[in-house]
Image (cartoon, rainbow, N blue to C red; front, side, top):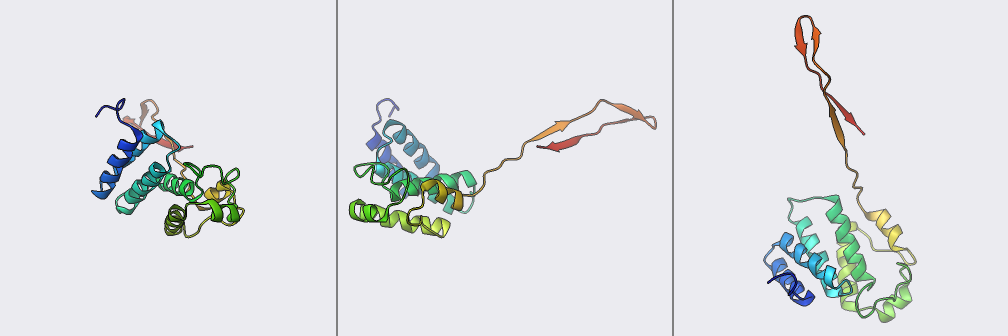
Length: 168
């Protein structure tokens, strides 16, 4: 089905099937396409988190960016930052009473279990999303290198080639 005719719901259902058959990369692509069309679908955020976590649990893939994205998605599900209950958290601040009264218990409990399994903790009461992410996310620093090869030099009658690796 072409991307222009695929609805967010059909993409989400395709992602659910891909998760069931352990095709996590395909499920991630379906979820990303669905979220481009409807960012407010909490079910899609949950499937996206499941697909990212499945990719991490495969054992062959340990990327800090995927881990951090997975934690962010489970946090969105945990705080109901999308969907019908959107807006019960204040600027990413976990307000325990409001979340308890108005949160979707099934999703919140599931998301908290997954957050605990991934990070070892859940957001503390009155802890902002930014602080929680800063506390639990893995650093994603990349090392860039430049290879500098000087011109040929004559030393002892032989051509010398030298290469230096500079790390920034």
